[in-house]
Amino acid sequence: MGERIRTVRYFDLDHRRSELHPELEGAGPRTVVDPSEWTDPNWLNDGFDAVDHGFEIVTHSGAVFSLTWDPPGHQEGIGLQPVPLLGSGVSVEADVAIWDVQERSPGWTSMAGTHVTGVDLHYVPWADRSGPPLWCPHVTIHGEHDRVDVIMGDSAGGVLVPSADDVAVLHPGTPLPRWAGHRVPSDVP
Image (cartoon, rainbow, N blue to C red; front, side):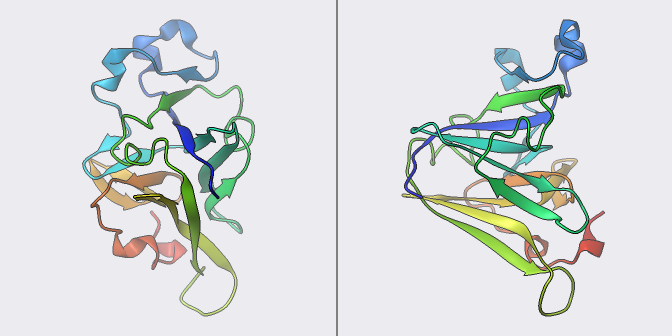
C-alpha cells in the first residue's frame, strides 16, 4: 500500500497481429504503439475493459504487480501477485499485445499517478454453501480519489458477461454486476 501508480499495461490476445504486423508472427510479445490501433482497441467496451490475460501495475518505485485470472479448477478466481505478468501468468514467448492504458482507459485515467490506499480481495464460497473452499471473483483497488473494480468478466458483443478466463475492469460509474460476487462456478459459460 502507499505505492503510486506509474503504468498500467494490459496483456491481451494480439487480435490484429497478422493484419498489421505479419512480420512479427511467432515473435513473442509486442507493445502497441501504432496510433491506428488506438482508434478502436479490442478491449475497450462501453462501461468496461475486457482483457484476455490480465494486467500489470508498475509503481513509481519500480515495483510490479500482476493481476490475472487463475485457471479453472481448485484455484479458480482472480490472482494478484508481486511479479511481472510475463513469465508468470503469460509465457515470455506468447504472441500477446501489450497496451499501456493508464492514460487511455476510462478505468485507469483517474488512478494514474495516485497512491494506492488499499486493495480488497472479495472472496466468496466456491458454491452455495458456507465455509471453504473460497474463490476471488472480484478485486477492488482503491486510490486517493477513486477506485477500480476488477471482475471475472468478458465482452459478448459489447455486453459484460461472466467469464472463467478473462478479467474486466469496470469504468467509473459502471455498477458491479450482481453475478460478479454472487455466482457459483456452474454459472460460468
